[in-house]
Length: 133
Picture 1 (cartoon, one colour):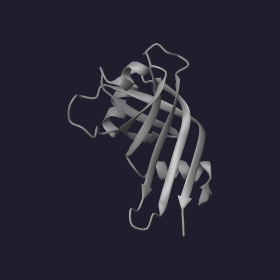
Picture 2 (cartoon, helix red, strand yellow):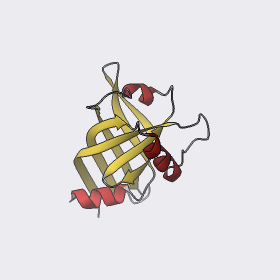
Picture 3 (cartoon, helix red, strand yellow):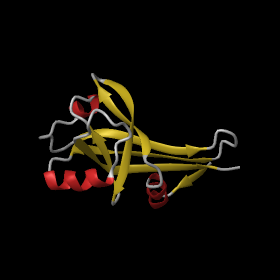
Picture 4 (tube, helix red, strand yellow):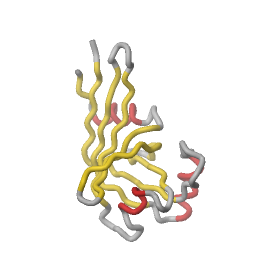
């Protein structure tokens, strides 16, 4: 395994659109697959009202909540590839113009229910591994 620097780890994260978000639900860890895009170094995850994730961060929450986000590409035959984990604060996107701009760039990976909210994850800790021979 080779450790990746922050810039390379974020670059790789930007090459895929699907990952997993880890958050706390009723004081226990929970993981959900979600799609994402990078906005600068921030990770944007679309949500829909009524989703478990939508209730994790209240729209008025200013500090956000700590989450982890993981994405990878690992070949099932060779076991080569990479994995990136980002830990940081997630805040709900509340600005309508920003939400519209993000919605035009991030396509939901499920057609229904309609995605109408987003989380912005500011990466504080970025770790990445490249799986090599």
